[in-house]
Length: 212
Image (cartoon, rainbow, N blue to C red; front, top):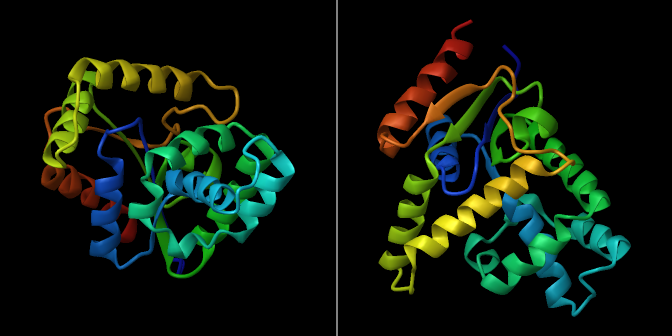
């Protein structure tokens, strides 16, 4: 068994992959990286420096300044950062740069748990365990709606459902690294599954590999 153990988790928005990734990270004492935050971190760097959001070379320089081990989820969750991140993520050179940084993060002992949309297919195709976490659009919209309600935010279920459908179409239809399960990924449909059940199911796949 190598001294580096990598778990790749992919899936659409609000499928629960991030929550599962953090839980596996804690259980296995592995660093966790939400790769979606890396694009937000580049956008935040640009916004903070009052730099253009449409200059690919400037965005690449910003990406190289990002420390993947120090991403602040609270800061990067800002709505303006999210809007800017969607522009940054469309730049091929930025994607290539961040993929290399994500690979370096995963390849450092003892390994890592990474979640995103192209981890098992592009970033870490040789990961020890690959999981594809999904749920019905309706269930994902309900979760996002409840999450916003619990934070005291205004939330319209239909708007959230429409947004999720649009994001799915964008993620699965893009030419560069489309969202899809890796051929050897384990499918976890969490539509009727709570986080504890999903975690236990994921751990059985991890333990199968670790026992080899």
